[in-house]
Length: 376
Ligand SMILES: *Cc1c(COP(=O)(O)O)cnc(C)c1O
Image (cartoon, rainbow, N blue to C red):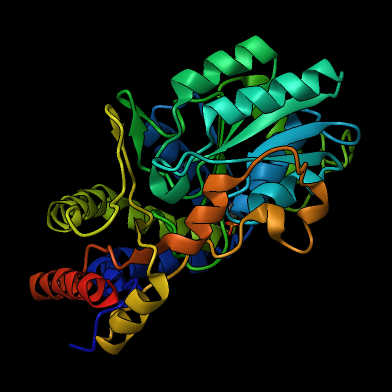
């Protein structure tokens, strides 16, 4: 078999072609490429879908994080905690605002922030009177972090929790959808994310009108309602009308896509759990399955075998942030990063998209079983 794709945007495009054509035609007819009516329509639909208070779109997931931190007035002399095992944008957003990141280790089962380590770090920094303002919780691979625990910690240590939900749009935690769980949630519409557009895009979900207005101002240069008065130093970070048109078309099949991915995840877990470490999903938590990530301490051999079987795989992430050349100077060596380090050497992700055929899924499962046996 040699036609398995890691992601199949082509098959998805076929399914939504009619919606796309109509939406594009409308945008082209009106020529309103910046803040056309589709942007507001999308924000309303996303707010409704998540049952969040407010939705504000922006030009990427990275900008969503920057806008979130700026709206909380985080900057110079502030510290923000984030996991070491994450995509670089999480830490990058912190430094762009002028604040400094503090890396914390992740849980070896959920891959999300480890609460014990988090409390330990908060205690140490707070006792030194360091200005820790926020914690960025990453919902890695689509699995929401444990927000019950996080909210308690936030209260105890007087910090804000910012959700980096770039990979978890569509997921839920205790019956609440991502966007409605936490006061401030950032997501990404990069093409490979659970809900992706045809370029860069992102959104914030926020609880208060005050923060919503702040973000709306910051995403357009910090202007006030009167567009010639600038009240903050902001960004140029609006979502394109054309991207909103793509997302409106994709939203129509999004729930179906999520269900299909859930079915594949269940099948993979049932078939593979005796062979390797499969993703752990805590109770009352639903993943958006941005990735289906498994672990093996024989990764090199397993990947070599799968490559020969023409099965595409990916490693997220081979280098934890606290070891990245541009970021390692922010790493406090007294904090152990055992799990981040171990995961960076053992994880890999396999195809999990709704357009996989039955025979392809079976072939993937059999090949992974074969790979694990071969590598032993
Ligand atoms: C993709 C991603 C981002 C950044 O999103 P962009 O839209 O690519 O800027 C941030 N955090 C995490 C965890 C991501 O996976």
